[in-house]
Amino acid sequence: MRRITMFDTTLRDGEQCPGASLEPHEKLEIAKQLARLGVDVIEAGFPISSSGDADAVRRIAETVKGPVICALARSLAADIDAAARALAPAAKKRIHVFLATSPIHRKYKLRKAKDEIVRQAVWAVTYAKRYGKDVEFSPEDASRTEPEFLFQVLEAVITAGATTVNIPDTVGFAIPDQFGPLIGAIKERVPNIGRARVSVHCHNDLGLSVPNSLAAIANGADQVECTINGIGERAGNTSLEEVVMSLNIRRDYYQAQTGVDTTQIYKTSRLVSSLTGIVVQPNKAIVGDNAFSHESGIHQDGVLKHRRTYEILRPQDVGVQESRLVLGKLSGRHAVVARLKQLGYTLQSTEIDRVFEQFKQLADKKREVFDEDLSALVEEELPGVAETYKLAYVHTTSGSETVPTATIRLTKAGKTIQDAACGDGPVDACYQTIDRMTGLSPELVDYSLRSVTGGTDALGDVVVKLRANGVEVTGRGTSTDIIEASAKAYVNAINRLLARSARLPRQRRGRRSGGRGRSITP
Ligand code: KIV
Ligand code: ZN
Image (tube, rainbow, N blue to C red; front, side, top):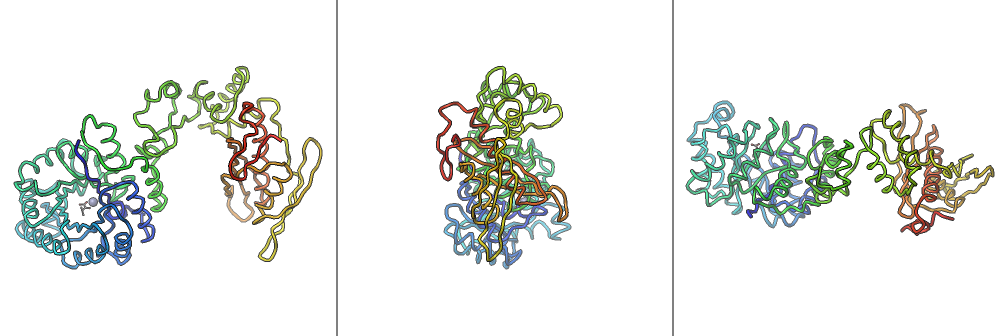
């Protein structure tokens, strides 16, 4: 089993993704998570490019232990000095120097002949070696460089001390059937290649960055340069999660492994997405929202019978809790019953018939039937789940010098009850009052407020998620007054909890939940 070095460049090439820009403290947060993920090398930035980047590299070098911390430099003294300064505090550091070698870059960008390129590359590696043993060299645009010249450059930089030689497909031009053999040829034709690790760095302009990287591994590459979610310049870089999981799932073929803790993948993906603002496409392999979702009834039935009929990855292996069966018009009874069970409903077969009939009608009108829709169907269809409490009146006082207080009036079975209580704010005061009046105190798992339309007179739409006795429900309330919308949503959720509780199997009722949770069966 070969061990592949995972070199993460999310913070350098990934940040070159149009629209992505990270503050130094955000880069530090990502770097810490990359260390937890178990990457071997973190390319933290390009220090000469800005003082912010230099600062970020320095902070990462000071704080993040475990992986090698790397910084990028052109083959110029000022760049290499800046990289070395930023990396100084790192326990393990690497300077990564690059110089273009392809005919088009030599002629138009650098205006240099081949022998000048070789001289400058050798000089840069020698200069970088003054700062440490670990030096990587990249012949930029390697995949469009004449192979013979590429071999010559690689031999020269390895003689000068490069410990890793990286082969970039800078413009995403390569195709796997050529790129794999190119790596094989480098391994065969560069006489001193045994003294360096061979790395690849692929861009995704033709959507081939992962296949090219895998072809390179199959042909002997020791290191792969990747980014989380595949973000990067133009169409992006090789996606780390796709390479890692391909090696993992197809170990039989590649006979190679990485040191990545795959259960950290999803968390890392979400962190990078939220800090860069680059959303993950739903159908993205491994980390997209749909990666573990099944829509077709045939697939749902298969997965329920044996997960591996339609899933090659276990969601838990990448840190996703569980697969999702998307309930919609293609779903069958098997999937609906399974979801009802997950939601805590145990229904008789005739009750299931009625709910399933209603489900089919709803699914014809609605693309996806969510858990809340299904709960609403059960509550509407079956007896004994009527609205127990109705909000009749809400009044709150709050302000900078006032103790937030709420007065609430509820009706229950035609009777009106009233109470008042204080809280941390007006919404909390409402919820404390309602808890007192209903004798329940479920855990507030989530609260969200959004405006339904624009303008200051917009309708506020509040959604709350409550949990008690292992049962979770969602309640919704709308009003032009956001406090009233909040109270309505809470009362709505309480009614659902009560309805759900009535349908739970006996032993689950009355079990206390943690935190504020109290029995929901009075
Ligand atoms: O794509 C590229 O060629 C690069 C190099 C600097 C390695 O990012
Ligand atoms: Zn690149």
